[in-house]
Amino acid sequence: MIMIFDEKGQGAAEYVLLFAAVIVFAILALWIYYSYFQDQNIFSTSEDLNSVRENLSAEN
Figure 1 (cartoon, one colour):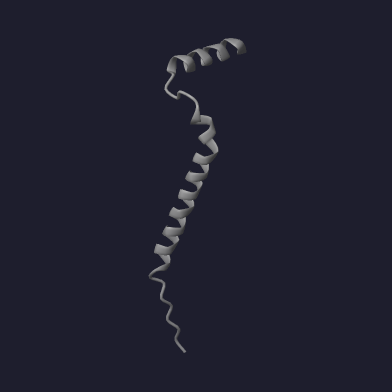
Figure 2 (cartoon, one colour):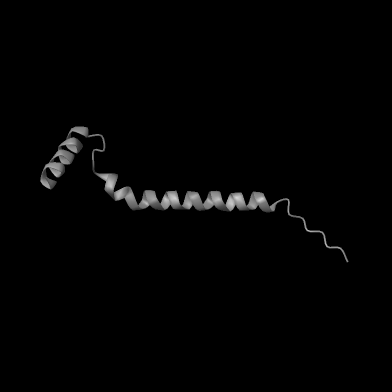
């Protein structure tokens, strides 16, 4: 008895599952960090530079 296995769609299904998992992890990361970025001005480079300078001077 010869069994024929049709595995043509297996690779595509695995890629779809992998892509779905990446999307789920990306949405989860955005949900976790949403509150961090919600009320902050993320483009305040002068404040960021001052914060880094203060932390570096505090370590020395």
